[in-house]
Image (tube, rainbow, N blue to C red; front, side, top):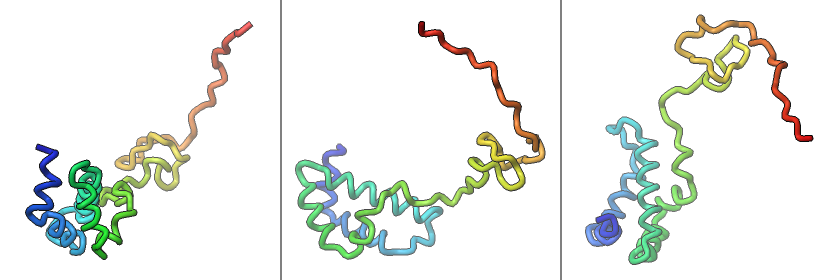
Length: 124
């Protein structure tokens, strides 16, 4: 079935429809950036189809809309979900990697002790 999608995309003008979606603001969609990222991912997958990829690529390359998206990596689209504080520990904290931004009052403001008792392998 998946092998039929590129053929159907050509037969039923799905490529033009997807390009039109990329060219719109998509205000009624919950996460427009992620939606556009998935469209780009799907179009790039269709280009790799052995039977119809070359024809699909010709159509996409003729599109000014595709020119704006073809070189972007779909994983670079930023999610609207906030991930602030996961790596830095938020503000006013010593930068713990495991810091949960939900309840910073439960974290100690003192860094953990340095471990000095590391087992050393004897390779002699």
